[in-house]
Length: 255
Image (cartoon, helix red, strand yellow):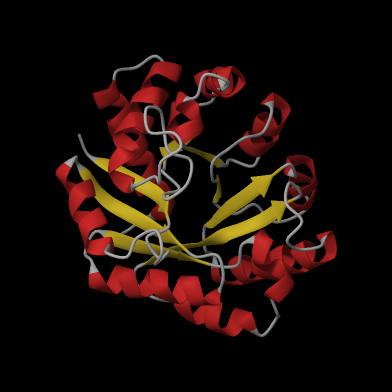
């Protein structure tokens, strides 16, 4: 099977002191590409460095809402520079997070709105982080020009999913698809168009069953692929083929 981990954090030095080992292990189970995602300027720079170091690695750069208290408009200069790198494939992960209180609502809105303007000016695809804030984020997006959107680790309700779909969005599927309590998520995934689904680990977080509670790693993407395959009633090989084609379409690695 050909697989693509569309969201991981090999740029987290504490979790991945030897990213080469993680890349090699992932390749051993058929993961041919890994997308490393930034949460601020420093981690975005590190994502690009890893993309330069490893053929299989690509970068997504941007400011996460939980880091918005440290964000300044001047950061956009560097983010735009990193966005122009040939192995940077999207802007992200940006969005809103009302589950945690690391940044105020005002700080998060400034951070996401200015990055949305940057995406619009550059035509970059966008990877969203959204937690307990789908209605608020969708209210913003529905008033703007529609761009290529991916909702990383989708965790909204059916109504949220329908609103995302109306914006032609893609949906990232992570470890929770394997959790017992995720019946609502699996039901939503079952009726979403298969051509809108991607798989991702978010490593080092959200390990799939049977590794829940342990530090996640890209090599465990195969378990997420199997969990999604069950949810959408296909076999794992077909699921891998579907999600890999979707990732190649959304991120356009050849651009």
